[in-house]
Picture 1: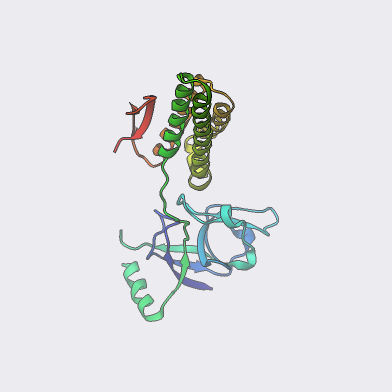
Picture 2: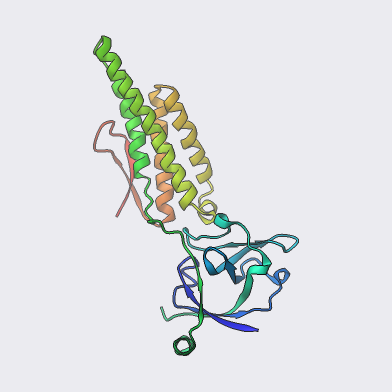
Amino acid sequence: MLKIIKITGESLSPKYQTGDYVLLATNIRPRRLRSGDVIVFQYEIYGQMIKRVERISPDSAQIFVTGTHPHSIDSATFGPISPTNLIGKVIWHIRKPR
Amino acid sequence: MFHKIFQTLDTKLGFEEAKAHCDVPCGIYDPIVAQISALTVVRMMDLMAGLESEGVARDNSMSRYIAVKEEHAEKAKHEVRIIWGDYIKDQHVEAHPELTGVVHKVMQLGSKVRQTADREAGVAFVEAVNQFAEIFWATKNVKTKKAKAPYAPALETVYPDL
Protein backbone atom coordinates (compact mmCIF):
# COMPACT_ATOMS: atom_id res chain seq x y z
CA MET A 1 0.00 0.00 0.00
CA LEU A 2 1.09 3.57 -0.66
CA LYS A 3 0.28 6.81 1.09
CA ILE A 4 1.12 10.46 0.40
CA ILE A 5 2.01 12.71 3.32
CA LYS A 6 2.78 16.42 3.54
CA ILE A 7 5.60 17.51 5.87
CA THR A 8 5.38 20.27 8.45
CA GLY A 9 8.21 21.26 10.79
CA GLU A 10 11.96 21.51 10.46
CA SER A 11 13.43 18.66 12.51
CA LEU A 12 14.70 16.89 9.36
CA SER A 13 15.90 20.10 7.75
CA PRO A 14 17.68 20.95 5.55
CA LYS A 15 16.90 17.77 3.57
CA TYR A 16 13.19 17.60 4.41
CA GLN A 17 11.34 20.86 4.86
CA THR A 18 7.84 22.16 5.46
CA GLY A 19 5.78 21.82 2.28
CA ASP A 20 7.65 18.80 0.92
CA TYR A 21 5.67 15.64 0.15
CA VAL A 22 6.68 12.03 0.70
CA LEU A 23 5.35 8.81 -0.73
CA LEU A 24 5.19 6.04 1.88
CA ALA A 25 5.21 2.28 1.59
CA THR A 26 2.87 1.30 4.40
CA ASN A 27 3.32 -2.48 4.48
CA ILE A 28 6.81 -2.33 5.95
CA ARG A 29 7.96 -4.82 8.54
CA PRO A 30 10.22 -3.34 11.25
CA ARG A 31 12.95 -5.91 10.67
CA ARG A 32 13.25 -4.65 7.09
CA LEU A 33 14.06 -1.13 8.29
CA ARG A 34 17.62 0.09 8.24
CA SER A 35 19.44 2.90 10.00
CA GLY A 36 18.99 6.06 7.93
CA ASP A 37 15.53 5.14 6.58
CA VAL A 38 12.97 7.89 7.01
CA ILE A 39 9.70 6.73 8.53
CA VAL A 40 6.30 8.12 9.51
CA PHE A 41 4.76 6.90 12.75
CA GLN A 42 2.04 7.76 15.23
CA TYR A 43 3.01 9.26 18.56
CA GLU A 44 0.27 9.87 21.08
CA ILE A 45 1.33 13.37 22.17
CA TYR A 46 2.53 14.81 18.88
CA GLY A 47 0.36 12.89 16.38
CA GLN A 48 1.78 11.71 13.08
CA MET A 49 5.54 12.30 12.98
CA ILE A 50 8.33 11.86 10.44
CA LYS A 51 11.87 11.02 11.58
CA ARG A 52 15.00 9.18 10.53
CA VAL A 53 15.67 5.69 11.91
CA GLU A 54 18.71 5.79 14.16
CA ARG A 55 18.75 2.09 15.08
CA ILE A 56 16.47 -0.84 15.76
CA SER A 57 16.70 -3.13 18.77
CA PRO A 58 17.98 -6.65 17.94
CA ASP A 59 14.51 -8.15 18.51
CA SER A 60 12.93 -5.43 16.27
CA ALA A 61 10.65 -4.46 19.18
CA GLN A 62 11.95 -0.91 19.51
CA ILE A 63 12.70 1.68 16.85
CA PHE A 64 14.92 4.59 17.84
CA VAL A 65 14.38 7.70 15.74
CA THR A 66 16.21 10.97 15.38
CA GLY A 67 16.01 14.30 13.58
CA THR A 68 18.79 16.23 11.93
CA HIS A 69 17.98 19.60 13.51
CA PRO A 70 19.61 20.43 16.88
CA HIS A 71 16.19 21.02 18.46
CA SER A 72 14.56 17.88 17.11
CA ILE A 73 12.14 16.09 19.42
CA ASP A 74 13.00 12.44 18.92
CA SER A 75 13.92 9.25 20.79
CA ALA A 76 16.38 11.27 22.87
CA THR A 77 13.28 12.98 24.26
CA PHE A 78 10.50 10.38 24.17
CA GLY A 79 12.38 7.09 23.86
CA PRO A 80 11.96 4.38 21.23
CA ILE A 81 8.73 3.87 19.33
CA SER A 82 6.84 0.61 19.03
CA PRO A 83 6.51 -1.09 15.61
CA THR A 84 2.74 -1.02 16.13
CA ASN A 85 2.91 2.77 15.72
CA LEU A 86 4.81 2.56 12.43
CA ILE A 87 2.80 3.96 9.51
CA GLY A 88 5.26 3.67 6.66
CA LYS A 89 8.68 4.19 5.17
CA VAL A 90 9.52 7.01 2.76
CA ILE A 91 10.21 5.68 -0.73
CA TRP A 92 9.97 8.94 -2.64
CA HIS A 93 10.70 12.48 -1.49
CA ILE A 94 9.06 15.27 -3.49
CA ARG A 95 10.85 18.50 -2.61
CA LYS A 96 9.25 21.90 -2.65
CA PRO A 97 11.23 24.13 -5.05
CA ARG A 98 13.89 25.82 -2.89
CA MET B 1 7.16 19.69 -11.64
CA PHE B 2 6.27 16.72 -9.44
CA HIS B 3 5.82 19.02 -6.48
CA LYS B 4 3.34 21.13 -8.43
CA ILE B 5 1.32 18.01 -9.29
CA PHE B 6 1.30 16.87 -5.66
CA GLN B 7 0.37 20.36 -4.52
CA THR B 8 -2.61 20.40 -6.89
CA LEU B 9 -3.69 16.96 -5.68
CA ASP B 10 -3.26 18.15 -2.10
CA THR B 11 -5.65 21.07 -2.58
CA LYS B 12 -8.27 18.66 -3.98
CA LEU B 13 -7.70 15.62 -1.74
CA GLY B 14 -6.11 17.11 1.37
CA PHE B 15 -3.16 14.86 2.20
CA GLU B 16 -2.45 14.01 5.82
CA GLU B 17 0.44 15.76 7.51
CA ALA B 18 3.41 14.36 9.41
CA LYS B 19 5.23 16.61 11.83
CA ALA B 20 9.00 16.87 11.75
CA HIS B 21 8.64 18.21 15.25
CA CYS B 22 11.19 20.49 16.89
CA ASP B 23 11.50 21.67 20.44
CA VAL B 24 11.86 25.39 19.98
CA PRO B 25 11.22 27.04 23.32
CA CYS B 26 13.09 30.07 22.04
CA GLY B 27 16.14 28.69 20.23
CA ILE B 28 18.35 31.21 22.00
CA TYR B 29 21.56 29.73 23.32
CA ASP B 30 24.61 31.82 24.10
CA PRO B 31 27.60 31.00 26.33
CA ILE B 32 28.16 34.68 27.18
CA VAL B 33 26.31 34.38 30.51
CA ALA B 34 28.67 31.56 31.53
CA GLN B 35 31.66 33.61 30.39
CA ILE B 36 30.61 36.71 32.35
CA SER B 37 29.90 34.55 35.39
CA ALA B 38 33.37 32.97 35.20
CA LEU B 39 34.94 36.44 34.93
CA THR B 40 32.91 37.49 37.97
CA VAL B 41 34.45 34.62 39.95
CA VAL B 42 37.95 35.95 39.25
CA ARG B 43 36.84 39.49 40.02
CA MET B 44 35.56 38.36 43.41
CA MET B 45 38.84 36.57 44.12
CA ASP B 46 40.72 39.79 43.35
CA LEU B 47 38.43 41.83 45.61
CA MET B 48 38.85 39.27 48.37
CA ALA B 49 42.65 39.41 48.07
CA GLY B 50 42.67 43.20 48.08
CA LEU B 51 40.31 43.74 50.99
CA GLU B 52 41.83 46.25 53.40
CA SER B 53 39.07 47.20 55.83
CA GLU B 54 38.93 45.66 59.32
CA GLY B 55 36.48 44.22 61.78
CA VAL B 56 32.80 43.89 61.00
CA ALA B 57 33.11 45.96 57.83
CA ARG B 58 35.71 43.54 56.54
CA ASP B 59 33.62 40.50 57.49
CA ASN B 60 30.63 42.00 55.75
CA SER B 61 32.50 42.69 52.50
CA MET B 62 34.26 39.34 52.54
CA SER B 63 30.96 37.51 53.07
CA ARG B 64 29.43 39.33 50.16
CA TYR B 65 32.37 38.60 47.83
CA ILE B 66 32.32 34.93 48.76
CA ALA B 67 28.56 34.72 48.24
CA VAL B 68 28.84 36.29 44.79
CA LYS B 69 31.75 33.98 43.91
CA GLU B 70 29.68 30.96 44.92
CA GLU B 71 26.65 32.15 42.99
CA HIS B 72 28.51 32.92 39.77
CA ALA B 73 30.56 29.73 39.78
CA GLU B 74 27.31 27.80 39.96
CA LYS B 75 25.67 30.04 37.36
CA ALA B 76 28.48 29.40 34.89
CA LYS B 77 28.18 25.65 35.43
CA HIS B 78 24.39 25.86 35.07
CA GLU B 79 24.59 27.76 31.77
CA VAL B 80 27.11 25.29 30.32
CA ARG B 81 24.91 22.37 31.45
CA ILE B 82 21.88 23.88 29.69
CA ILE B 83 23.72 24.26 26.37
CA TRP B 84 25.29 20.82 26.80
CA GLY B 85 21.95 19.16 27.58
CA ASP B 86 19.53 21.05 25.36
CA TYR B 87 21.55 22.21 22.36
CA ILE B 88 24.54 19.93 21.84
CA LYS B 89 23.78 16.86 19.71
CA ASP B 90 25.76 13.78 18.72
CA GLN B 91 26.88 15.39 15.47
CA HIS B 92 28.43 18.29 17.43
CA VAL B 93 30.40 15.90 19.64
CA GLU B 94 31.51 13.93 16.58
CA ALA B 95 32.74 17.14 14.94
CA HIS B 96 34.36 18.38 18.17
CA PRO B 97 35.45 15.28 20.12
CA GLU B 98 37.27 17.48 22.68
CA LEU B 99 33.91 18.94 23.76
CA THR B 100 33.12 16.28 26.37
CA GLY B 101 36.45 16.88 28.08
CA VAL B 102 35.99 20.64 27.99
CA VAL B 103 32.55 20.42 29.63
CA HIS B 104 33.96 18.11 32.30
CA LYS B 105 36.81 20.56 32.92
CA VAL B 106 34.31 23.42 33.35
CA MET B 107 32.40 21.36 35.93
CA GLN B 108 35.52 20.43 37.89
CA LEU B 109 37.03 23.90 37.86
CA GLY B 110 33.62 25.38 38.72
CA SER B 111 33.72 23.33 41.91
CA LYS B 112 37.34 24.16 42.65
CA VAL B 113 36.76 27.92 42.47
CA ARG B 114 33.96 27.55 44.98
CA GLN B 115 36.09 25.51 47.36
CA THR B 116 39.12 27.82 47.18
CA ALA B 117 40.22 31.39 46.52
CA ASP B 118 42.90 30.16 44.12
CA ARG B 119 43.18 32.77 41.37
CA GLU B 120 45.01 30.39 39.04
CA ALA B 121 42.03 28.05 39.24
CA GLY B 122 39.76 31.03 38.54
CA VAL B 123 41.71 31.97 35.41
CA ALA B 124 41.68 28.32 34.30
CA PHE B 125 37.91 28.32 34.83
CA VAL B 126 37.55 31.39 32.56
CA GLU B 127 39.75 29.72 29.93
CA ALA B 128 37.72 26.49 30.03
CA VAL B 129 34.45 28.37 29.62
CA ASN B 130 36.01 30.29 26.72
CA GLN B 131 37.04 27.01 25.10
CA PHE B 132 33.44 25.85 25.44
CA ALA B 133 32.24 29.12 23.87
CA GLU B 134 34.65 28.73 20.97
CA ILE B 135 33.33 25.24 20.20
CA PHE B 136 29.72 26.35 20.65
CA TRP B 137 30.11 29.08 18.04
CA ALA B 138 31.95 26.68 15.73
CA THR B 139 28.87 24.41 15.76
CA LYS B 140 26.95 27.38 14.40
CA ASN B 141 29.64 28.24 11.84
CA VAL B 142 30.12 31.59 13.56
CA LYS B 143 33.68 32.91 13.61
CA THR B 144 35.06 34.01 16.94
CA LYS B 145 37.62 36.52 18.09
CA LYS B 146 39.52 36.92 21.35
CA ALA B 147 39.65 40.22 23.17
CA LYS B 148 40.26 41.38 26.71
CA ALA B 149 37.01 41.91 28.61
CA PRO B 150 36.42 45.68 28.84
CA TYR B 151 36.14 45.52 32.63
CA ALA B 152 38.09 44.04 35.52
CA PRO B 153 39.56 41.43 35.62
CA ALA B 154 40.11 42.18 31.89
CA LEU B 155 40.92 38.58 30.98
CA GLU B 156 40.96 37.39 27.42
CA THR B 157 37.45 36.39 26.35
CA VAL B 158 36.00 34.69 23.26
CA TYR B 159 33.34 36.70 21.42
CA PRO B 160 31.41 35.91 18.22
CA ASP B 161 32.95 37.88 15.37
CA LEU B 162 29.74 39.10 13.71
